[in-house]
Structure formats: C-alpha cells, structure tokens
Image 1: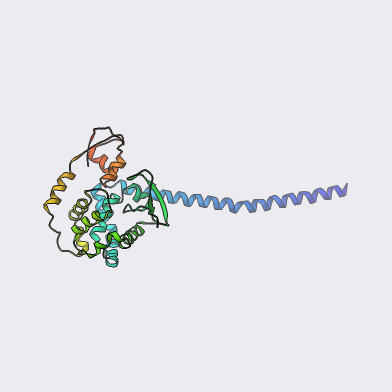
Image 2: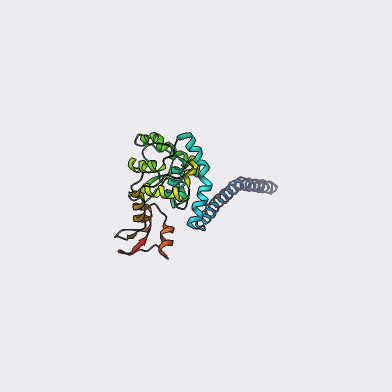
Amino acid sequence: MKFISINKIIISVFILSFSTSCSIIKFPFKAAKNVKKSIVKKKDKSNNQYERFIRNMSSEERYKWYIRTYSKIAVDQMKKNKIPASIKLAQGLVESGAGGSSLALKSNNHFGIKCHQEWRGKKVYHDDDEKDECFRKYKNAEESYKDHSEFLTTRGRYSFLFKLPNKDYVKWANGLKKAGYATDPRYPEKLISVIEKYKLWKFDGSKKQITKSKKTNKQKSKDESNYVVKKGDTLYSISKKYNTSIDEIKKKNKLKNDQLNVGQRLKI
C-alpha cells in the first residue's frame, strides 16, 4: 500500500510539473500573437487616419497641401536628374489627384507607373486601360518620386526630353505626351494648367510663367465641356480617362452615389 501511495505521489508531481511547463511554453507564443495583432491594428488605424485627413480637405486645400509637402522632394530630384520640379509636381498632382487617388493612398504610387517586366518590387492591381492592371507599390511617397525620376532617365523614349530647356515646362509637358507617358490627349494642357494656376514654375527657378499659345487656350475651353456617359462607363474609368478623382467628379456633379446612367452628362 505504501509503494502504491509513493507511486501516486510521484505521478501527481510529474503531471503538475508537466502542466506548469506547458503553460510557460504556451504563454510567449500567445503574447507574441497579441502584440502582432496590436501592431496590425495600429498600422491600419494610422492609414485610416491619414485617409480621413486627405478626404476631409477640399480639392483646393489638398492641392496646396500637396505642393507644400512634396515641393522639396521635387526640387531635390530636379537637381539630381534634370527633370523640372514644376513638371514633377504637376504630374504628381494630376496622376494622384493631389494624393487623394486610391492608388496613392493604398500604394504610395503618385505617378501611375505600371509594373513593366523589370519591376521586382511590390505590386497592386487596379482597373485602368484594361481590367486588373499591375501597378508599382512603394513604401512611401518619396520612393515613388525617386522611381519616377529613374523611370524617365533610364528609358530611351524619354531621352529627347533632357535636351529641352530645363525651365520650359510647356515643351516638357508636350514631350511627355509625345513619348507616350499618358493616353489622355489633353495631358499636356492639364499639366500646364496646374503649373500656371499654382505657379509651380517658381520651383524651376523661373521668375515668370511662359506665355500660353492660342492652341492651349482653345484646348482649355474644351476641357470645361461635359462628358456624356456611355455604356460600360464607371466613375473610376472616367476619372482615370480625365486624370481626376472620383470624389472630384461626384462633388462637381453633386452625385450622392457611384451610380451612372447612359446619356448622363457630367462636368469634368
């Protein structure tokens, strides 16, 4: 009987020790899991706060904020790569909707640069000229600005741009269209309009804007015309076609939702 009691005691001690050790082993994993969850939540919360910050500004406020925020990066890149700061800022403003596009908010892609074969970085997919096209994703906006410089300086079709006067944003804007940077036929006029409205030419070191041609003025008047919604159109496809944001189209047309009707006229 004593022998059985001793065995029972030994077994009881062994079970107790094993349970205690298991609880010690499990705790760190559980704690790490909770820490990981808290980090993810903080990251998501930060992203949501930034998006709310962008969305709560009016279009004009956002444009001015964008210029204040990214003008230094544009000037630094101009000094290194000879791309006019006015052009870089104007492209960033137009392509990203002054930082308010989904591509800029979710991927820090401010210039609408697609993946292409040589891209080895992170990727995201958005509907553009075609469905689910691959776009580059960056850690932050500064990386996007640097990659934009590399994109222009390392591709042969843009090489002629660097023979143009560095302060001639009109020739640069038309040159980008000629090289095929954007499919929008009004792309040069949009860049020039933004540069002159916000006096971005000052960042090139210029003392005054370049006098616009009659052709530019005529094209500008066409830009203010209405767009007639066609079958298959969405707010997203229209915003990409005219290099504007969905929010801007909705605001101009006082739309309460994303629903469109064929034949509907929209102010762009």
